[in-house]
Image 1 (cartoon, rainbow, N blue to C red):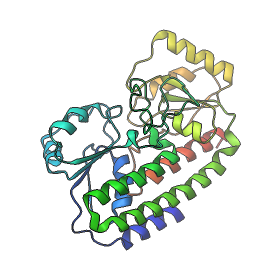
Image 2 (cartoon, rainbow, N blue to C red; image 1 turned 180 degrees about the vertical axis):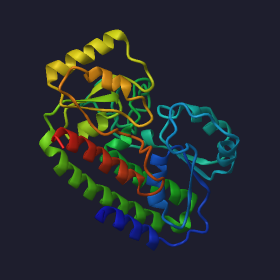
Image 3 (cartoon, rainbow, N blue to C red; image 1 turned 60 degrees about the vertical axis):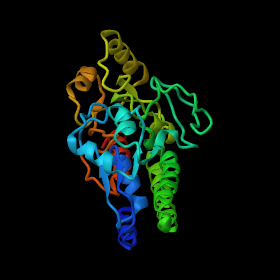
Amino acid sequence: MRIMLAALAFLAASPALADTPPVVVDTPVTGSLVQQVLGAGGQVQVLLPQGASAHHHQMRPSDARSLQDAGLLVWTGPELTPWLDRSAASLAGGAAQLRLLEVPGTRLRSYGGDHGHDHDHGHEPDHDHGGTDPHAWLDPANAQAWLAAIADALAKADPDNAAQYAQNAQVAAQRIADLDADLQARLAPHKGASFVVFHDAYGYFTDHYGLRPAIAVSLGDASTPSAARLAEIRDEIAATGAVCAFPEYASDPKLVETMIQGTKVRMGDELSPEGGALPVGADLYAGIMTRMAASLADCLSGQ
């Protein structure tokens, strides 16, 4: 609550930015970070409706108009929103663009458990994106690096307010640092616990907080697990002594429920790496991280 109140006070203090160019973003998560830097004086246009799939959104006429009118487009990258790749070039060709996964200092991981091999996109321009896990915002260090890059992009588009954007980014980064410290303390007792998730989207979170890598029913986004994979999962659950299983927002929980039938694994609250059930706005990012940590900690501690 302390963090949320600070966020509201910070946004309320931001002056009106009359010269801010139209800012368009791909997802509510990106929108949350950009809104924190932009402040209350400007409004971010989010293309993806809240709760919709980031991977399978169908562009609407209103999306096309937003891209054509954009002065700045901030998006994660085609690894997360492939539907935006061609449109970003054809419809928003006149806008400045920032791809967050390409921000120097961003720590990337691959699907399938590539732990400990982070990549700095600022120094690996030829990195193969094929297996890149795009849920990089779940590492708070990435979110902090992105805030600074967003401030730079906004400053280039609106130089008169550059100092305000830089200040907003610094305040937002400190809020994330404070939140990170709280979550580190809350998750520290559960570093050895094994748990099951719907799909492989939580590696950045588990890596950052030193948690055991989650057992993912689906190894990639929107991929249906094979019979062999389902057998492997059951073996992993037994071998690791998994404690909890977590369904995912907007996904059928029956597959996860089926995997733990006949075991002592508890079903936890649903997880949402994109904050599907949370209100859109500047506070969304903190809400995602707080709710995820709470869901994990509550179930793993037996609550």
